[in-house]
Structure formats: structure tokens, C-alpha cells
Length: 592
Image 1 (cartoon, rainbow, N blue to C red):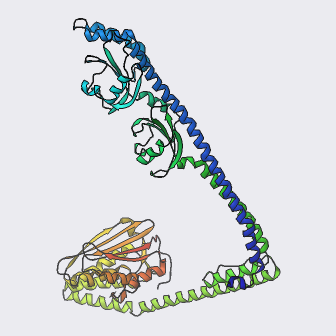
Image 2: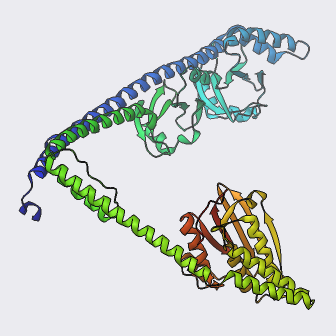
């Protein structure tokens, strides 16, 4: 109720009326049109499917009629029955004469179906059977005891189309075949033939589906018990479920939507004469509604386009006066979030243009002050670093080291002389003039001097393996980056290690950056320490500088995309990866 208690603005009221009176009716009308189109599409597709099924059922009935005609013609042909009787009574000397005569007589009827015919069996009244083409694999007495055999004997001179029967022939891998039988009547008193039985394959019915245009729909002919007579090549045999068979049995023809299978199907079916067979046509529902989906998208896009254009025009007219104030509020919100580039256009109403120019000038002044502050801070950091370097007088330190070296030389103490010489070179290279950058090859030499000192200090408790890519040696990097990391590996990693330690120093150029890895097999860092470093609060220090300080120094000069990455070194130790940009030339810079 609070929504209606508070007065609405004119723009809000008009917006609500536009949505209720224009947008809702357009959406409702579009939805109704799409539903009517979908219903008509389903009806038309179902009618076309039934028409196709009628053509298939007619072709199937024609094939059955052909089988029945040939069976009837052979069953009442006196010449064939006479030859069959003579063959039954003949001895071995003239048996082949009757066999040849039988083949010639039967060829007149079976020529049109020679590829389908598997065998013809003549059962005699006093026992015995003659097999044309293929012999029976089932015992003769077992066949005579079958229900279809007894039923055919009761209806003489009538062809019994037996449909799909268990295969009873030698050499056949198929479990079943089509059968038709006829029992010659007593009119043929001179014939010993009691039953003529044809066995055929389903080739003729398979050819029916080859005549259908290929698409994603499927055809199948099934018996009332669910046995498949023939099917198209893209038919899925798992689709003949008990639920679907029950629906198909309910009427001679019809259709329904099958949602039980994995793919939703429109199923249409029609009966094949009086055989009890059904021709089933399956169409994927997604294919059926493909055109509807395209029309649906077009109508949806068109509806949204009309609504969008209408609302844009309407809202533009409504917000014409309040728009400048809304723009000012939005820009001020962006400034509050830190976006100092959120300037306002100076066109439009004169008052708003003046306000925009004032607002833009204020932002320019703020950015100028921030830039000046950043420059002052950077100069302050440079001064602080320069002061840190100047705390030690390099000339005094180098001269003192040189004097120690001469004293060691006079005293013939080579270890002290070599160690002093390495320290002097290391200090000299660290404080020389030449900017904040140094060549990576020079940094490697400095590390070797430092390693010489540390090896003497720790008694050769570790060895160093160098894996330096030649492409990396000519690149430049900040001074004093590698020595603190290497010192940490020696002091903290090798101090408590009883066995021989190993440090690997590797460098390579990859994807526009220089990667330097210092890995040791020392004590390593705990997961807590690694987490603290990633949180920018590393407690470990070395030579007055921690990992976080080196990491911060790299990012200060090169940005947040660069810096240190710490990880455990398998199987033990710590692995430090340093990523810095490729610097090909040492530019003239002020030394820090």
C-alpha cells in the first residue's frame, strides 16, 4: 500500500501506462499467434505422415498379396502337384528327372520373387517332405504338430499368410522369416501333396523403405507381438517398448506424442490389412518443431524490436527534460567510485552546458593535483633509496677492502685475499654509477663473487647449477634483485641441512618476459609462510630486505604484472620465480 500512498511522478505514471496498454497486448497477441501456428503445424505434419503411412501399408499389402498369389498358384497347379507326387514315388534312377521338371515348373511362378524366396516345402499325406532350394532344420513331425499346420489343413485351397515365423531352414542366420502355406483340397485326388509351405526373407519389405525420401524420421513394420518385420536404416530398435505397443494396438491407425523415450517423438501408425501388422512412423519432435522454432525466434525478435523502438521513442519524449539531471547524478556517482574521466557533454540547454563545463573543469583540477602528488611521492621514494645507498661511502669501503687484500697478499694468505677480492668486486659493482639497471651477464658475475664468499663461509656445503639461456644474458634488470633471493636460499635453506645442498639458477625468455628461477633443496618454507607472502606480509628477512620488499620493488618499476612467485620445490626446498619485462637497452636514468 505504501507504493500507492506515495504520489507518482508523471514520467513513472506514463511508463506504467505504456507497458500495460502497449507492451502486454503485443506480447499476448504474439504468443497466441505462435500457439495457433504450432497447432496447425502439428496437424499438417500428422496428416502428411498418415498419408505416407497409407502408401507404405499399400506397398506392404501388395507384397503380401504377391506372396499369397504365388502360394495359391503353386498350391492349385495340377502339373506341379503331379510332379511333386511323381517325385515322391520315384526311385533314385529317375528322381533327378522330376527334380529338373519341378525347378522348371516353379520358375514360372517364383521368377519375380527369386531374391526373396528361401525355400518351398511339399509335405506328403503319407509322410515325407520335399524341400526346394533349402532343407528343413526342424523335424518334420514337429512341423506337422504346429498350430498353423493344423489350421491350414482345415481350410483347404485357402492361402494362410503366416507372417513372421521361426526360421526352420539349414544355413540361415536370421532367427525368423516370412511364411505362407496352402493345403490342396480333396479335388486333387491323384496328388499325394498335403501341404505346400513357402519361406521367404523380408527383402521385399525392406525395399519399401528405400523408396521413402531420406530424412531423420524412421519407419518400421512390427507384428502385434512386437516382432520387427522390416525397418528403415535409421530406426532405433529400442523404440519398440511395451507402452508404445499397447498404444499402437488400440486402433487401426492413429498418432500420439511419445515422451517416454530419450528423444521425444511424434508416432503415427497404420494397420497392414488383416495381418495384425502395423507400420509405425517416428518423427523427432525437435525436427517437427524446427520450422516453428525458427518462426518463433523471428516473431520474438520482431516483437522485441517493435517494443524496443516504441519504448525508446516514448521514453525519449518522457525523459527529454529530466535527462540532463540524471546524467549529472550518474556522472557524480562514477566520480565517487573513482572514475575521474566521467565528463559531461557541454551541449543542450545553456544552463546544463555551463554546469557541465564547471564539472569537467573540477575533474581536470582533481586529476592535476593527483598527478602532482604522485610525482612528489615518486621523487620522495627515489630520494629515500638514494639516501639508503649513500649511507655507506663506497670509496672508503673499496679502499679499505683493497688495503686488506694487499695485507693478505703480503702475508701470503690466499683465502683472505681471494675472499676480499670477491667482496670488493661485489661492492664495487653494486655502488658504481650507471643508473638503476645492470646487464644480466654482469649480475651473474656478481652472483659468482657472492657465491665464492658464501662457499668459504659455509664450508662448501652446497653446489650451484647454472641453466642460463644465452638470449637472457644481454637483457637488463634492476640492480640488487638476485643476490638477496640467493642469500635467503643459502642462509635459511642450507643453514640446518646436514647433507650436500644444491641450488639451481635458471633464466630464460618466454612470451615477452624474462623469467629467473632460484630453486634450492633446503629446509623450504611452510604453507603458512607461503600464504603470508602471498598476503604481502612475509616475516622472512635477508640482508635487511624481505621477499615482499623485492617483490614490491619490481612492481614499483614495472607494474603489477611482474614480481616474485614462491612455491615449494619438489621433493624439498623452495622455488622462487622472478618475472620481469624484457629490457634491451640501459637508458640514461637517475641512479636511485
